[in-house]
Figure (tube, rainbow, N blue to C red):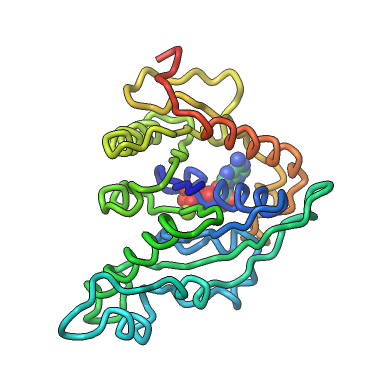
Length: 266
Ligand SMILES: Nc1ncnc2c1ncn2[C@@H]1O[C@H](COP(=O)(O)OP(=O)(O)O)[C@@H](O)[C@H]1O
Ligand SMILES: [Mg+2]
């Protein structure tokens, strides 16, 4: 399954993508984690030593020129081997689950066209699109795409081909309005499998009446272990709340297995 994560900045997209990627790999699945966010933090959130972070694809002028060319641009390059070449393996946040052999977890850092090597933003854009489309349409492994805060990617065609969308939001009006906007846009593109991950929320928090929010709601509490850890480490894995996070990941996957219907209570 190919899953995109969207929502307002700071809501918890990167953390949730890192948790789900680790859960899947420990369950025996092969997973691509794609960092398509400007903040480039999925690697660190997944426990990768910062010195091992790859240069974002958007800044690899050599590769962009090779695949897209100069002058006459190839807008449909053959990129099947490229993700593998550019990826770095990610460490597991814990042991494989009982009776399973851990799958591969790989990171691909896209970067942004704004940060592209000078003069090749357009070519970089074409290559990023091709690589993302390849992963989403051709790869048999799981692909989790950590997107920019905004909804830009959803309009670009490729992300519209994912199977499911996780909209991450804080339990606040502004964050939920952004979430609803993203969800509506995705719905308009035919993306019916959606879940709202309400991060840092309490069981009793009632949702305000905002049209367009996904019907499936996953509540993630504040994690004291993560709060304590985050001044000394960028990793969100291997927390004391591991069991709770794994249960939430399983719940999220169950929710995404079916199309979401409008919330019972609007
Ligand atoms: N449930 C949670 N409890 C405690 N801290 C959290 C929780 N979810 C996320 N965080 C922290 O909040 C910050 C923002 O999360 P992040 O996943 O980077 O958001 P985004 O990718 O949406 O910008 C990070 O420092 C992360 O460790
Ligand atoms: Mg992020």
